[in-house]
Length: 292
Ligand SMILES: C[S@@+](CC[C@H](N)C(=O)[O-])C[C@H]1O[C@@H](n2cnc3c(N)ncnc32)[C@H](O)[C@@H]1O
Image (cartoon, rainbow, N blue to C red; front, side, top):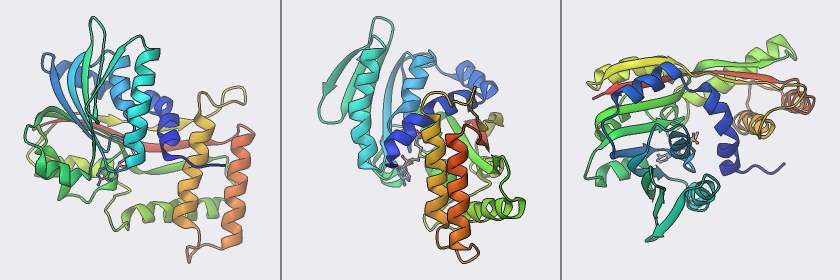
């Protein structure tokens, strides 16, 4: 199987659509200032949150800056957002090398794509946004020191979604002791990345936000729950599951506490469970709406 990170982000859309906490989303809608608004999204990947907010009628008129450090993601956003817009009946204009506009009679989103490290972007950004978005991103950053720097990007709201929070569950069980060890070691790799990261980022955000002077307006769980129906996974979710196992493989292959052959056979059996439509994957995560 070929592993493409942009395809993983595409396959994640339907999983995130179900997972996003509706109480927190309602609070976002209730607190958004009148359009047009300025949005900065950091760690934005290929732009799926932007398209979701348009699809869900949360955002109709906005300047939307999308920041991601991976050139492949920004290139995919440049190609994919216009494709999505065309299929959704929106007109598209491209101006300069990194600017897009998607619009119709009621909607108008001016998009700027920034291929940059988030902290370089923070240094050069001049105008804070009405809304900062960080989706499936904060659990990758060093905390608490990143929080005040990120919050400098907004003068009003921060919607911080899909923050991993310490629970991974893969069913059916293969071997209870091995399953438990692999999950524990996988979480430990999130806590020991040199670039930062926290396997309990969700619960810790309450404290990080408070220390950075922000008020939590709403919070709630946004768990990923992926299962088949009549033996089939919806959309591209079988690929999503294979990619999750790829993360396990990348972070744990060669680990001193795992027997290489036993781990390889565990991965193979999990992949076979996907092919049979048996694998159920749950990841506990949390969403926040905060006001600075
Ligand atoms: C798990 S992905 C989520 C992407 C997107 N938010 C989504 O959910 O589709 C995390 C993203 O953060 C980006 N990223 C990681 N570290 C970054 C940094 N220091 N500055 C900017 N982007 C970063 C990665 O390139 C990746 O696209």
